[in-house]
Each structure stands twice: as C-alpha cells, then as structure tokens.
Image 1 (spheres, rainbow, N blue to C red):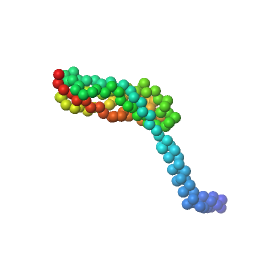
Image 2: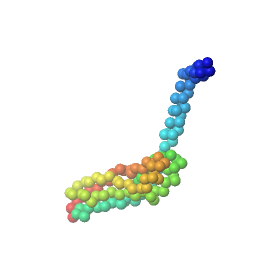
Image 3: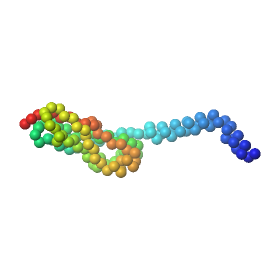
Image 4: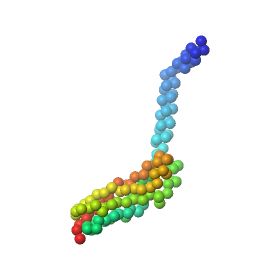
Length: 131
C-alpha cells in the first residue's frame, strides 16, 4: 500500500516535474557552455624558409593565438609556453605557397581544463621566387 502511495506521489503533477527538470537542465547547460570566452595573444612565429628559393613577399614574424575557455582559466595561461611555427622547407617551385601554422604547447595544461588553442590565421602564405 505504501508503494502505491509513493508511486502516486511521484506520478502526481508529472508534467510540471518533467518541465521543471528540462528547465533546470537547460540552465545548467547554458551556464556551462555559454560562459566561454576568447583571449587573443600574439606570439613569435618561427618560419623555416627553403634553401633554393627566396621570399618575394613579407614573411610574418608573429601570429595571433586564440585561447578559448572559461574566464577564470584563460587569463591564468602563460602565452610564453606556446610556440608557433611555419615550415616552408618543402617548397619545390616559385609561386605562392601556403602552409598551416603549427602550434606546440604542453597538452596536459590545456586539455585538462577544457581549453582550446588555435592560431589566427591558421595558415601562412608567402610568395617565393628563384635566386
């Protein structure tokens, strides 16, 4: 008899209970995922040029790094630990060549706290000509 009272108590006003649960879940998700911000820092770009071709356009020396995550964490990240590079050593002809910007940083620091790190722009292009 007590089980039926318990079951009837749970099932009473079930629409309001389900609606309240969905609203609470939506609030938790929005607070967790909408509290994400970006921090942009500029770091030096290490560019490796080919030996048999010369750069005819400007070679960038810095790149913007975007650190995305919670406000309480992104400003604690030391940008000195992030290294950016662009390797043009495989260039085999004159013309415009585009390579992706490679980032190296200690993975455990960034993945543990749910941070993402990306380069802006994600690739670099340079015009090369023969000597």
